[in-house]
Amino acid sequence: MAKKELLLKDSDIPGKLNIGAEELKGSGPTLSGFSRRALSVFKFIIGICLLPFVYSASVSFLNEFAAVDKAFRDYFWAGVAGFIIIYLFIYEPVIVYNKGQKLLGVLFQFLKPLVKVAPYVLPIYTIVVFLVYLALSFLLKTKESVGYFVFLLSFSLTLHLIFSAKSVRSKQGDFLKANYIFGFSFVYIMDVALLAFFINIMFGEFSFVNFINSSFQAGKGIIYTVFKQLFL
Image 1 (cartoon, helix red, strand yellow):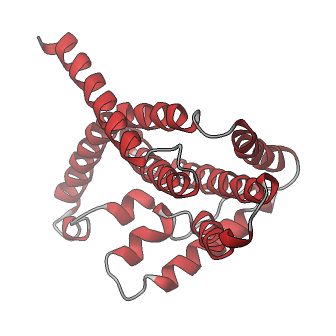
Image 2 (cartoon, rainbow, N blue to C red):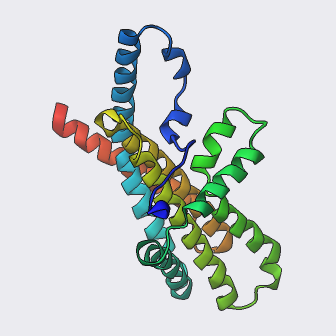
Image 3 (spheres, rainbow, N blue to C red):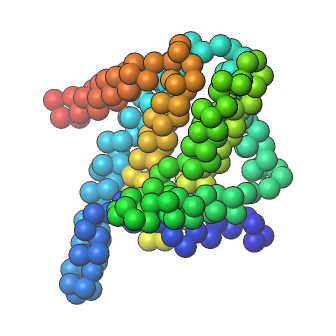
């Protein structure tokens, strides 16, 4: 049972992303409670606005990734499926996730407020895999050797996203689920964009510029359509 519990003492992603949250404390229980509710409502609104971009970033990534050789796409999805199978049926590697967070905390300890945000936004193992790929890229002559790195990229990113989502969802007193909607949407968009940047460097067929542009335009279009239906 112990390994089934996600005990991350410093895993309050939205708390780390709050600007001015500390200033809301100490002004009396009534005002403090009202301020927290108001902040939750604000984060809920921002989180809802981020959801179209969660969708558009996913679709844009898949559309660009479709141009990459099918063999590499197979390695990518094998990495995603491989981690999910391990997570569901074999072992929850929460210790691995926690150690990665601590490592990033050490690396960013001199850069505030990045020291609070980086461990929960940046997928450290995905970054390490990519850096190793860059160091060894001149030696990788076959599809299989490159494919192994694609597998590890998707495997490690899936690990990060699943435990990040679980961390945010486990937060107590999440009014309107604002922390979950805002926090995980932000993490997801940032991580997909980072993955797109890595894939762009690895494969010339993938365009990071097209990914960013199509993600923004599609997300903006969804928001405009919803706003038009509701208010115009």
